[in-house]
Length: 135
Image 1 (spheres, rainbow, N blue to C red):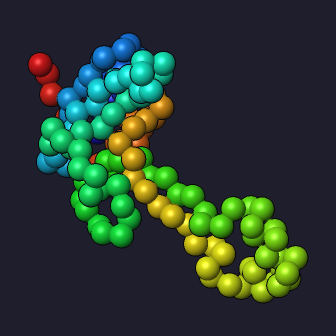
Image 2 (image 1 turned 180 degrees about the horizontal axis):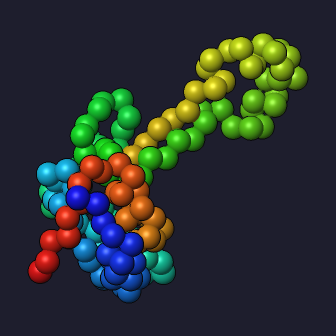
Image 3 (image 1 turned 60 degrees about the vertical axis):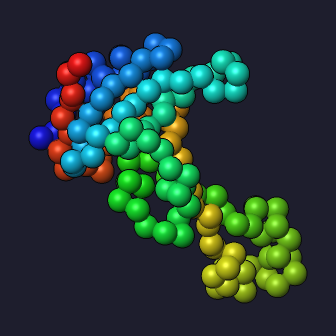
């Protein structure tokens, strides 16, 4: 069962206020979305908890975990644009474009979201069924 547009806006609205929370059942997993302060209360982020917990093991992309699909995927290139440009000067554009190590990215899965709307939209994309848990 998917969420309706009204449910999505209602859930996103609950996650706009500080310390707001939403409980969902997504593909058989209990997902808790909570607004928490970050950096000493200067900003707020929506944190994701799967079955009531978050494990640092899920952050790494070296091992596959089913819980990673609920988290925010972040990919950063291993070589910065400046380093890549420097290598292009040394080896040439074609050589750098063909070399796979300059295209590699470091992938992590993070539990935080900038807004509740972003978290809800991601869950709607990756989950087959989403149910709201009424408290």
